[in-house]
Image (cartoon, rainbow, N blue to C red; front, side):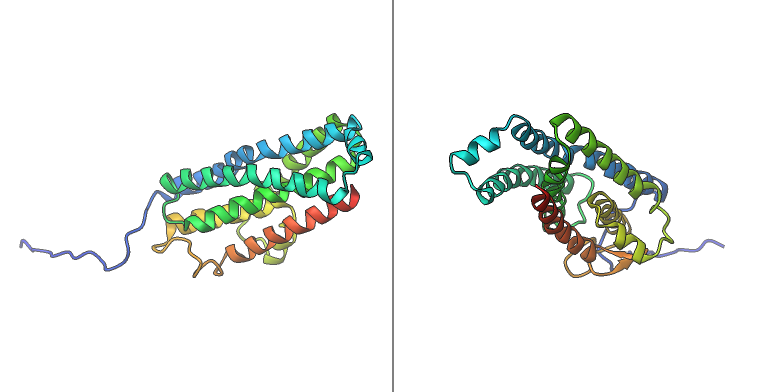
Amino acid sequence: MAMNVGYAPMSTAPYQVIDAQQSAQFANLFPFFYWISMLIPFFYLIQKIASEKESKAREGMKMMGLEDGSYYVSWFIIFTCIVSVMSLIVTVVLRLGALQNINAGILFIFALLYSQTMYGVAFFFVAIFPTRRTSVIASILYQFITYILAGSVLQDPATPSATQYLFSIFPNVCMNRCIKLIFFYNFNTATGLTFDNMSIDYQGFSFRNGILIMLANVIGWAALGLYLD
């Protein structure tokens, strides 16, 4: 017997849905391209300050009255201007493209904080290694190793929260964990990622804690790098 079936859509906010496997692959690949793009200002900074150290240009500036505080602040302002523009571009592109369910302010804050962690990291390697070449090589190895650490050792969803937060002192690990949450909220929730739900834990990690750790990394790596310098 024929039956007429009525259908009414659920009264929930519409959200983007893609295949789970495609979403997982996209989430695994995206941090790599994001990481590569954000390395551009980092290598610009590390080559510039390493060149000044190697050529003794900084000593010459100090003989003419330049103080260390002014030197660090000037480079911080220049670097912040560069990464702010890059973070804004990245935010606009992602909001118009794949991550339409993520709050634009959250995306910008995340991109800016991750970029600024590299300020202290650059001074850290320049302080330890004597030449521009060795500083750049060592920083490349550091970036590669910490990125692999996030993508392999901590990839298991069952990884304890304490382990994830401990290794998040490396900015690449924290970035990877936060991007995992960004993709989860964007493709698997109706509300997306907002300031109201960013404190919710997913697989032992919350975006709010990730942002706080990233802020601590900005301060901690800068303090360490400038102290050693």
